[in-house]
Every structure is written in structure tokens, then in C-alpha cells.
Amino acid sequence: MAKQARTVLSLAFGLAVRYDAVRENRVRDAARLRKPPAQAMSLTLQQVEEIRRAVRGWRRRSGLPGPPPDGQLEQIIEVMLGTSARRSSRHPQV
Image 1 (cartoon, helix red, strand yellow):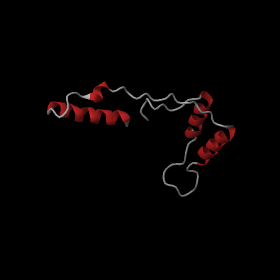
Image 2: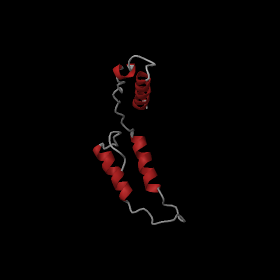
Image 3: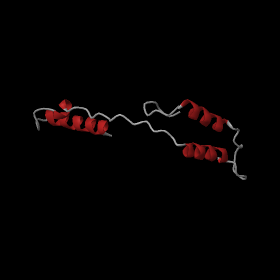
Image 4: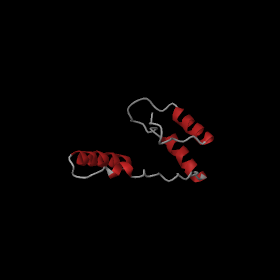
């Protein structure tokens, strides 16, 4: 959001410079905001068990449309838990 605001302000000040409303685009010289490093968070054993319980019960009720779960989601979750895999904000979600 900060990057988008900086871009919009820079464009607005660029236009103002072109029309001689201001002498220079001060936004261009402004330092970029740095994102503080994220702290790693570990799940508690209770949270892991809640995740396992939730995924085991997902779409298991009768009367739901579509095929029942085939167990792949549970396997994926177990691999993620076992390898400490996590989704990165740098990569788009698949």
C-alpha cells in the first residue's frame, strides 16, 4: 500500500513540476519504507491437533454436493507440518 501511495504521489508531483506548480518532485528523493523482518511463529501441539482435526472433518457430512475428500488434503497438511513448509508472501498463491 505504501508503494502504491508513493507511486501516485510521485506521478502527481511530476505533473505539478510540468505545470510549474512546484520546482521539483520531492517524492522521488524520499527514502523507501523498509518492512521490518517478520518473526517466525511455531505452532503449539494443541494448534497442530486442531488443524488435523479440522482437515479430517472437512466435507465429511452427508448431503454435501460433489465427491467426498480422498485424503490428499490430510497428506498435504502432514507434509507441510513435517517439513515446516509455509506459504510465502513473495510468491503468488496457486
